[in-house]
Amino acid sequence: MPHAARSASFRLALVLALALVALLAARVQAGDSALRDSDRDGMPNRWEVAHGLNAHRANARGNPDRDGLSNLGEYKNRTRPFREDTDGDGSDDGDEVRVFETDPGDRDSDEDGVLDGDDSADEDAVDDEDEDDLSEPCVADDDDSDHDGLANEDENENRTRVHDSDSDDDGVKDGDEDGDDN
Image (cartoon, rainbow, N blue to C red; front, side, top):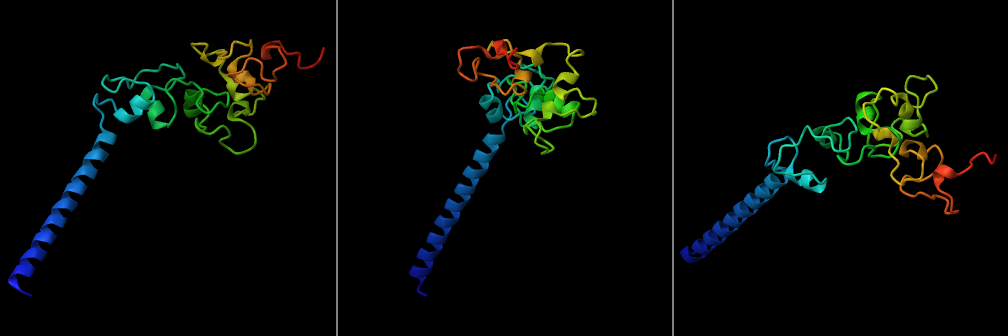
């Protein structure tokens, strides 16, 4: 191979190698920014911003939804820091993680056809969602998001929707329905 051809091949190989190095460096930097934790609270900036938290203020111990899981706990369990019952099964995320050992992101963790909140882990005939009502320091379980007179945790038992005050559109609020026609 003539000297000029070898020189051109070498330059082309060098340009390609430099381009590959630049591409890999950009990829590493992009991955690093996705994992960046500016306030060093254990939660990536991207997750904090996506969930309405301040990525530049250490807030791992915060608990805006009062569900028993800190923000860091919400991150680790893939739940939402401003929604006390991420999967809508009737049990708060913190209760599912610490008390009942169910998945706060799966409405029916044991796949038995019964929502986790309606199960009775200790088999005492009291639904898990009602088990701790007397001992809870707050009334978060008894929220009524749609103001229909029926607590969120009881909407599923009545086959009504948490964010619709008149689930059957009959002009009567869910909490005022007469389920037994008496």
